[in-house]
Image (tube, rainbow, N blue to C red; front, top):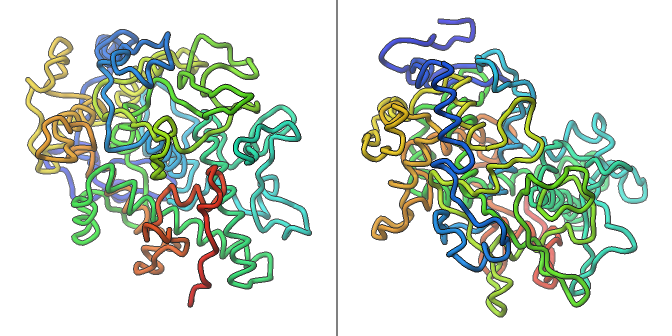
Length: 523
């Protein structure tokens, strides 16, 4: 046993559990060997597989961002997933930023996950929003005593020239004079959609603060903040467990883990982040990204904003680039959420939500020309992911499947990798995407529903880690009050989902749908 108490690498039989100190990355299957030795030849093969124009490039017609939304002929190899809306991808990215933050890893050298600190506490507690709290992160909070001092987060209006659609002002995350976002995690300003989602959580917190003051009746600023923070966190955790996970891995797998326990993700003292999750399984969302999006609808004086998710040919210094990168404050850079989530609007088809892409081995072409690549790093996201799996020594998909007692994919199901001799020892990230493409059926009676959700290997890794983080957090609702149900339930649907959070946060256009505040809870 090592100093952390887990089994060392090597051996034929992977242990049931592995143990890591809090704040560390680790391995879910520490006895499994890396999928291959790190050699120049293998690196060249991985870069060939993940290159622009390679086998993972969907070859979208990125010269026509508008056509990519309306015309499937522009994106024949990049299939839509009608069971998940476009916004689910970015909510998944938001969750990822809540769990992990590693600014130290390099694609140029091999990495031992034991030695790498996770600079984010591995919980689902919205650290990226709250920072270290009002006392230690005062720049994130409103200091106006008349509004309750540091009791709630701030959002900032776009100013006197703010665009107003249907009489609703638009908002941005707070920024300094150089437009750097004043938020708990700078990654949440990398693209416009996650930046606006972060804003939604700031505004949701502020609305909950008002609820705690006016309905619950608390008056002490510290108590107001803590109660609002608890409610926001628990509603967020509820969405993960009752909406995001069932849609991503299937309700039956979620129920199995809740009722029968986790089989592979275990720890001794505190949860850790497995590299099988962070480097491979949870990167499934990259295949769901659309090449272009309609960010907002426009009005009589302003055109709608449709653009590529990212255009690497545009200089980073442009103040209002024609893509959806973040870090900019301009009147058109806000989101109309109806195009990302289904609010049940059917009076205008042009305002309905759009689907995200299926989970498969094809990535949108916009992701093969990332702006501002890291030092000596590739501009292709697929190349970066494949190389990261190599430098972290992640095991093959086939070996992980066997360790889980799942039937591995056959070599003929991975025939595109035969030329690279990786059809029998496949990088786990690629394997999980292919598994979803073949086995990830949302409807087992529909042969075309493959890629609608994760398959058995990817699904279990993702679900066990997310559920495990909730079960390992003494402040989560699963630990404190597993029978709890949301306070801000939608009266029409009797549910609380991401669309309800956006409504309550007042970032959804039709504010009249919010309705009255819920009654004061008994507890």
